[in-house]
Length: 469
Ligand code: FAD
Figure: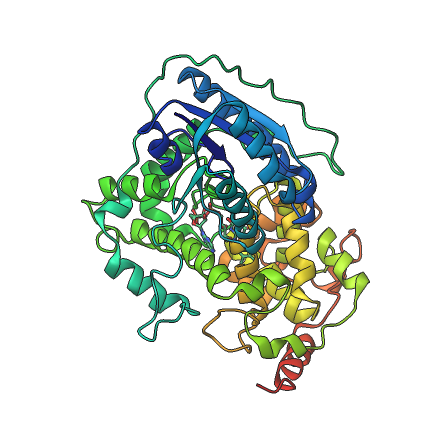
């Protein structure tokens, strides 16, 4: 009665629904299908793929300790998954296949194809809602629709969350050794780009729980006050780990509750604000199921499909390279390219700059982020981009257009973040770093702004006004 557990973006042995359920039924064999071509087709770049590979190596070490063999197969695309899994199931006389569900459209289709192929062979399959608290479709508006706006979603989430949804799943016990060997892990082939230094993002379950512990001990209570300040490391930096499941939302929320007298919504404002970010994460996973057009390169708000984006390759290049002449935008883009991560406030600022000030199609920015982010995750990335471009779930109307200079004076008052990523501006007085005057720019190698804020703002407003609802 061998149980086959297919690991995907849930690379942990603790609190893993599929592993826990399989362990209750019989001896486990785990499998990972490396799908580099498919990941690249989904826009993932070297940073994420390298992190993924290192995460698989880490979970292999944990599984070794439990005597759970890990099989490793390379497939080109998701279309190959069903056959490869069936071959394994036949070879090892598998009783049941288990996996934790993923919600974007291609992943859902892959899983359906696997379910059908297994059904035809009479082998049972079980998928688990593990990555989020509510199965998509189980948290709906009064009218029975998916939520398209965050605040009511969040209210409903808090009202309906139960202890069971937060209970940690059992870690499998050490099993008796099986006569099945783990596969040696192949090295990663050369990718289009070099990944960032792996020491920036140690890839393992224990690195993730150390991060969580450090965050809650030292920064959690200051989160509300500091989370918008890019110079301060005020956020958890857990996103790569949550994206690949090296830590679960349940582990995060349990840790909050033990710090916060058992509460998620009351008590310390820093901690409860952080909980809300995890609810945002869940919200966007529901959105991709409820509004699957977003998985087909379409906007959440259908009428914005008509928007006349500008074809501006030069502007796009300047944005990618951090040469827009808006120091906060440029510093943020350099942080992204150098580290594979960007602070949330700056993701909003840079995304809005591309889609509003340059009026360049948000899909180009979404793809650039995906190529560089070590935490690149379709639901949050697409959700964030559409929110910033006013094609998505933002409850505020399209005329929310951040002024990048004001954002800079508010959130990087001393220009420290700017100076760190743009050392060429370090010699300028702090106050001048937000929008260096021309005479200060003359002697240094930094561009003047490529667009004027006011003019660009009006151009964006006109483009949105021209849309008929
Ligand atoms: P914390 O502030 O510590 O938050 C804790 C966790 O909550 C995060 O790790 C993340 O899992 C989740 N979270 C926080 N904010 C959001 C949010 N707005 N939407 C969804 N989940 C959230 N997040 C990704 O994980 N992957 C992406 O590809 C991604 N792309 C983004 C693109 C844009 C344009 C924008 C505006 C946001 C994007 N985000 C993405 C959301 C957010 O910026 C990051 O999750 C956050 O910056 C990660 O840092 P942290 O782990 O320190 O977050």
